[in-house]
Length: 523
Ligand code: KIV
Ligand code: ZN
Image 1 (tube, rainbow, N blue to C red):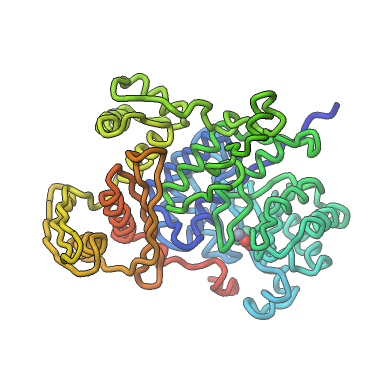
Image 2: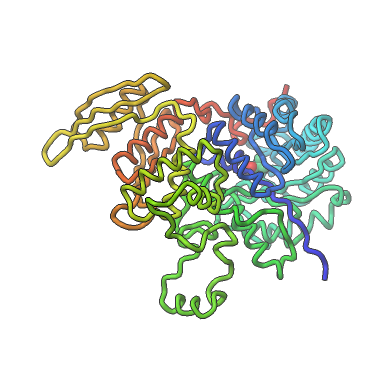
């Protein structure tokens, strides 16, 4: 029997994932996600696009300096000296730095975006890869929009990039246009026709516009790709990227077919998914494969009957293998700190003593209000706590008066450091509107509310409510989330969370998009 082939998992949650509208993360959040990715066992973390903004640069720099003994840390750069130098500046402290250089190659991009002919593209790609290779040994080159690039030209660019020093050749399906047989064929052709292809690892980077990102990535692996680029929860530009949890579990569950393994500790998938969902505010759909709330729920009687007789009748993976605990009903008001610490650990959270102390206090308060505290309650409390860390404004207290026919009024106090500011407002458009208006008045940040949702974290009338809001300011979308047994408080927390993202100068607005600007600008 041949040993399984080890597939490199390249995570781009912090770069391509963060490019999805409204998914911007602050540095503290990025560091948490990076630590979670390292614990998950990914091989490469693409930490950002350093030239895009000061915030991206700083995030890559801090991740590069902090992550030790695990994944390579990667920074993205267009094919010009300025981008590449900046990427290296951010990556210098990494134990295992990787520079990822990209340049579009398809006819559409050549003609309309870059206004460059084929030979200019090859010259530019070679120059970029050479410059990056002067800084470190691990160089990835991506011919952007490869899936729509003429195959003969793609082979020429790939050969030239490898000759110039690229050690990974990534084939992006930038616009999610490929199908499995098509992309599998592209990888097969590269392996057959590019003479120096053995000197590089072939990678794929699939977008999900047709819902085929995971299927396309699997087809590429089947045809010899050794690296797959993916994101937690599949977040990313437009319809997102190949979902990390899905590709990893597909390879694991169907090892009999693919003959491949990864280094991912699959029991950490659900906690990583929760963390990313919490910090970005992007919720995972209920029926999402692997990490969705219903992914392991069996409703139909006939299925439940089969499950009781033999799990494998209707279950191809065990929930505990992806980090879902078997028991859900856990703690009550008599449970102690040790039991809580144990539960948090089982849920995949590694809490510092002071975080545990704060969680314990919140848990006690919750257990006083709620008879039964479920795993999902504990996870929500922890996520809420993580979200609150480092936020500029927090809610001190509020009083709300509303009723049929009455103009709602609110007295709200927000704290910023030691300072507490109170405002009283009365406005005619419902209690939430009054509360949000008071927050805007105090913080001085006005927004347009685009979406507002409430759902329960667990079950029962006393369940905690989780609120997500989406607000718009200066054309940018920001999300916020808040949890409480009091849905008004949860709403205020969610709205304030979004405002805090704006206040933190979330630099999404200042970012250079890798796609809009001409790669041709060079220094
Ligand atoms: O989708 C894409 O082409 C990219 C590249 C920068 C790899 O994200
Ligand atoms: Zn992409």
